[in-house]
Image 1 (cartoon, helix red, strand yellow):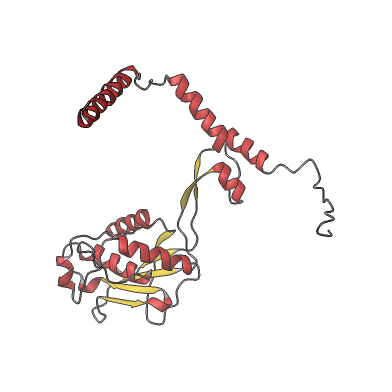
Image 2: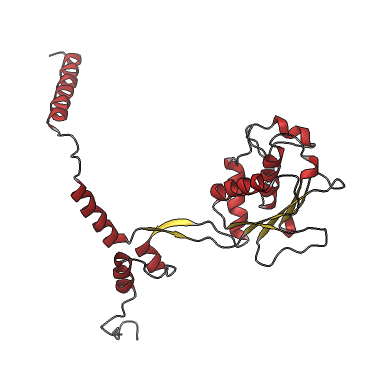
Length: 250
C-alpha cells in the first residue's frame, strides 16, 4: 500500500478512536450540597483555610489641605492601597520643609495647598514627597499626580509604556494628555524591588497550616485551625538520639 495512503488511514483511525473515547467519557458530576460541605470540611481540616499575612512597614498619606475634598482623597488612597497591597494609612496633618517623617511611616506623601510651591516635591533619599493641589485645578489631575508622586517616592521613575502616568510631565496641563491614573507593570516591578530592600513587604495569602509551620500564624479562631495549631506546636514525645559514627569520629 502506498505510504501516503497508510498515513491517511492511520490519521483517520486516530480521529475515530478519539471521537469514540470522547463519547464514552461522562460529563463532570455535579456535587450535591452534602458533598460540597464534606469537601469543604476536608479542605479546612487539611489546611485551616486561607488567611492574610500582614505586610511590614507603612505607606502614609498626610492630608494638609482642603482644596481637594476629603472623600476624593480617601477614595484615591484606598484605590492605591488595593493595588499595591501595602499597609497604607491616611491621616490629617501639616507639612513644612522642616517637617520630619512620622516614626511609624516607611514612606510619606504629603498633600498640601500652597501657591508658592511647585506641582510636586520629591525627596527620594528621605522617602517623602509632596503633592501640591494649588496647581491642580482641573479634572482628575489630582489622582494622576498622587500616583506620580507615590511612584517616585516608592523608588520608580519614568515609564516607557504609553498608557503609564509616569510619562514625561513638566507642567500641570501635561497631565491631561496621560491616558490613565493606574500603576503600570514596569513601575510596579520597580516599586516592589525598592520597598523590599527598604524593609516594607506586601501582604500575601497563605494556608493556616503553612503559617503555623513558618511561625507567623495568629491564634486559632475555629476548630480546624485549633487542631492544626495543636498538631504543629505539639512537643516531641521521643527524645532525639545522637549516635556515634566511628567513621567520622563523632
